[in-house]
Length: 104
Image (cartoon, rainbow, N blue to C red; front, side, top):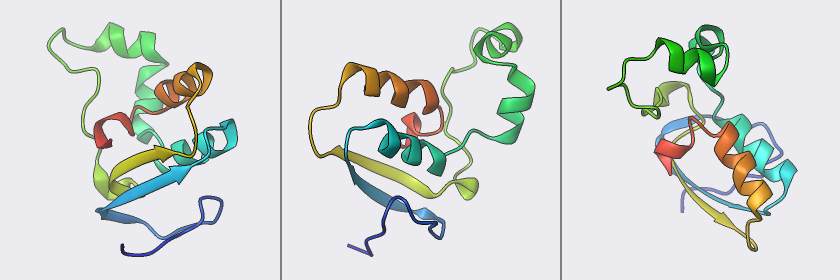
């Protein structure tokens, strides 16, 4: 164990370090997790949403690629919830977690 930090506090980035997240399965905690792994600026500008990405991608381009870890809070993450994750919260995590999915 390296150190423990609170999710609601501003934290130093450790892009070469794995993180263990133990969070409550609620909207606020999941949103804070997503905030630690924001989409790349060029993803937001170029895509115009998923439809924009799909229209410009070659068929062999993966939908989910490994994000540039130098810009992320942590290099990889291990995600645990204090109780069962509802379907609604899973959808929230998946819809906003483009940069998180390859790191889990």
